[in-house]
Length: 158
Image (tube, rainbow, N blue to C red; front, side):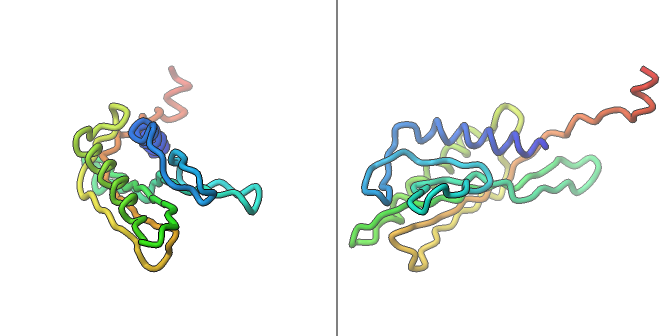
């Protein structure tokens, strides 16, 4: 599936974008973001924590007509841990979201084959989940047409 290439390309882009940045982890250390594709891995122990994190997800796709482009909706789920008494973890969420959105605006091509289109949406989720803070970005990409194989009869003829 071509959408899987978009997801992995976005993950690589984020790894470069946040290289060297550290954020708070539940164990009290400052650590780099963990970046996952589509979902979190299963915990091996109860102590496993994945925060701080970004999950790169592909939500849906659409092709309205035969000559229309393929669109795919992808997004980023962002999670931060901040146990400070001033409840300022949302600032890290906004920093991460701003950095991703700025990068997508300045460099709309992913792996020279997926073009970022619009709409581009974001949301900070702040409904009493502290010390865990969350946000999300949803972006639309134009996806290339998959290369179609000729029917089996035609391949046998060749």
